Image (tube, rainbow, N blue to C red; front, side):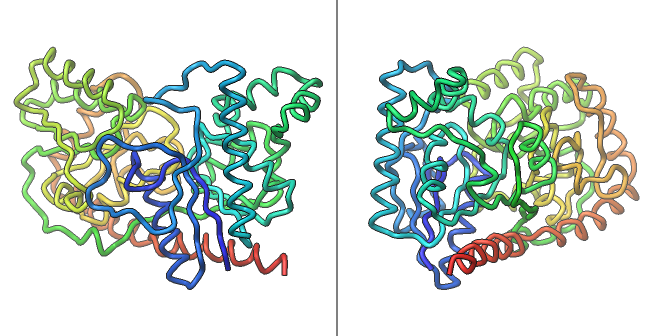
Length: 397
């Protein structure tokens, strides 16, 4: 079977979990004997992941609307040029590769006209949704946004420009959502999801072996993308109430926000308690093992969240807000401690103090965490995605 797999960023040029999940799925499909071609944007990271080599048959040829963590304003001519380039690129790969199935991944900031083009040409398609791009995608896709504003004139303009306006995602593919929360948000945004299902993302247990228990020393870890929505600033402020604790912030992403965090650390006089680092992917397991607790202080409706599962697999207790998709596996007092999300660092500090003062609680969370992590594996997720892609191909034969 031939699969054309399409998304906005592909490792080693990536920002985090979504892209790594995609790459793992591609590898799984190839191991099953399928031919997979990856079509992605021309994005190049300034610091590509040194632990990941460029995969074969990856074509970095699409253009997108995202630049430097923002969506700059473009003229009508610039928008049209992006759309025509992307459609021509897709058409060429569809014609030359003749895929049996098109597999959509992260389409945030992308030309959503690509999805509509494949639908109109009758290709079987399966999409994997790991964040809320079905909600924000039409807003940041400058072409689709303009078409929505035109109302009844949109079909006329679309036909003259030879760029389709998307009709409905629900008729374009079968959609696999990483959490019920993400599926619900897409439905609430107005998409009719006639063919959809849930496949929870998971971790590779071989990467996160059980670390030995350790006496409490107040070593806290934040690991993940640097992003204002992740609540890292709340964690930093909590340190002011935890004089015997230290926080290591491990990750990259939004350089401007990282600078803001460093300025906050300096303003609060916490330079001796907070450390920033960017270890490579192979060092992540060691970062968990060296921590006493892992913080997941996200402020937004987190689509899913792999970090708590990785921490649990390593045997480290988790303190989290439990928002969004993570609420589907985090249970306060059972496998983690949950505090009310918000800008008040006191709640986070109180949860850490509770954990520090109760060795029995830490042990209970550790044991329950092992059981939780075992339920959500990377292989199970990849198998679910592969099965749906194979089924989509079989339905067309």
